[in-house]
Length: 363
Image (cartoon, rainbow, N blue to C red; front, side, top):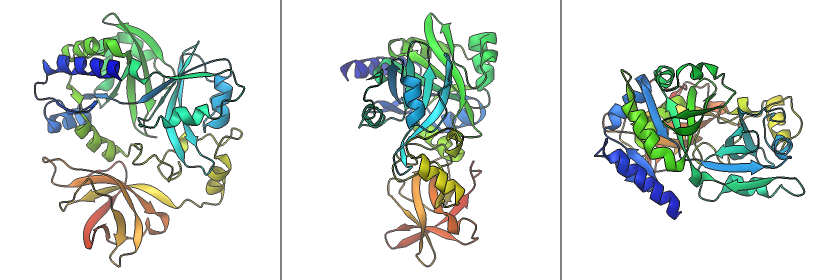
């Protein structure tokens, strides 16, 4: 933890040269300069988001066979220098975590959600019995930069040249930029939303971020803090643990069912997921929310009808001073999803009207 904090503090000190008003909360950055400017960059330019993730390193000859058996996607034929998203579910078909598996030849990286309980590591480790697999948490060794926005491809072409054209959504490139070795790949963070991911050694992160800031040419490029990213995340319907990825939900409900391979054999939770699909027993679905009245975004709310009948729950809410509304994500029960009625969130005895929005949210 000392090394992690030291490197993070060093990186923040470097960034202060460019962003004197940077706001830090623990090991995350709330904003660098202006939340509104950062939000506009991620919508119209190229936003660089420092993504806090758990990163596991797996070695051994049984890794692919093992992950194939216990997770949702077909990873058995994953080739070196390729990557694939796969889900880890419990016996009830509910989430342990969503992950990205990267095959790097001699070893694998498994990039999961950030959580304080080392949830993914412990889940995987308890199923390793006689398999030739070694697993280590190396989250402190790397920094992940997720690049979002319509100018991302053009900006990254400026940095990486024709190498960027080699990306096909499945492969991973090992490149050198500013004397730093990095991993670069493109992927879909939702079924329809692509982004690029850069993985760099943690000790080189300050120098590379400085290089990226100084080499943006004509493009609208900016570092994106947690506040601006959270608005964008909610608009785009990107599920986040523990809000939309937790052990109360299955992938049918949070729109991650496309990361399940229904043609592969058994995996943990497979029978439940298949039965829900076959008999159309899905109970709720992920929806967007818009609230025009003032609301405390830190509270937990139920979604109710005018009669007070519970119709769902709110999972995420976010607002900023430059917005005249609050955006959110929630889970609406399927038997209410096609009803054209007014919904509310219940704040103690008060009913606050909300709009149910399709994802991506167009406020």
